[in-house]
Length: 465
Image 1 (tube, helix red, strand yellow):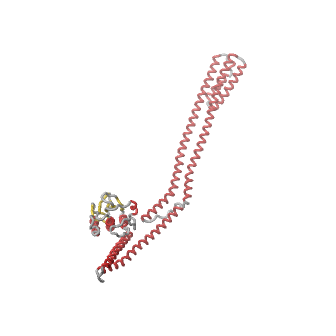
Image 2 (cartoon, one colour):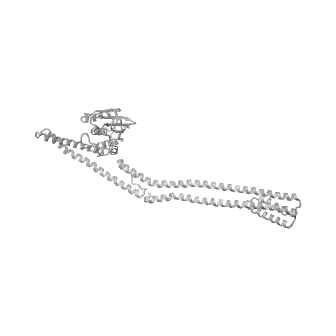
């Protein structure tokens, strides 16, 4: 395996690798731009030179025609000298233009016409002389057309070259930018993968769901160090969880023996086995008995929570919801004797772990009795919706503050409002409800309903077993 360097090195290397295609693209663009500039300069110089030669040729043919016609009238040596000079200038301009244009047919025809016109001194026939001059004018006109055609041809070639260069530039840009993006994605993935692994570890630690993945081998050193720290923290949390579970188990069991002795002693005293008690002693005995019952309830809650922590898989069976609810309400008959309990069971056959579901019912009904308004009804509604069992337990009373909802189902968290029975709770009831629902792959939450002030809704999937 290749061990990556530090996060800073990985970032810098990824940045530099992503820049290489962009630098190549910039270099190619500069090279193509230089070629375009050079080509434009050459073509511009060619057009300027050809147009200038054509203008000189036009001027020269006018001078030749004028001087020869003058010679035909005056027949003087001075005019002949001017005619010879004009023919020489015309020949020079024609040669320069022919070299630039590469049109041998027109140039050779013009050269033959000049040779004929060179004997203008001996030409007596005016019509023949006019014909020679007219043919030279036609050749010059043909050269002018050749100049235009050559310029148009070179412009078209230049345009084709520019189009080809643009197409090449577009393909090069697309390819190099794609390579740069791939390099950026590769570099970012080398960072994102270990970060996602860290997030996965944190989720597992938060929900205690499964084993941690092995340490990454291809990640920056800093992220590997963080991953090692999280592994160490997970092991430490596991140790603390085992210590807490053992402490709860031993403390709860150790408290059972002296509690049983105290309860037995209180029972003997209340039955006057050791003698009659006066009113003050009976009052003290009543306080002792009440405190003993309260302490016994707390110990049973701790045992219940401890057993819940140790349960790994639920035993889901088809159960009768009416029997489960009726059994729960029978246990709370004394607490709810002054209240109306509205039970609405739409679906009787449900797939649940009976022990876990009974704990949910016990704690939700207990919570409704303890925190609901005295003398107001309690609603229990059970039905199937979208393949899930839904249990609503609602009561009237003071609504739960929105800021308290996020921590409502955490263990050992007690609400600020006093209970109706004036007993200080353990803060485990709703936590047990949440854990029981979670073990059956469900959840619990606080919902708003129009018939009550507080409603806890438990949803449990109903897969056939």
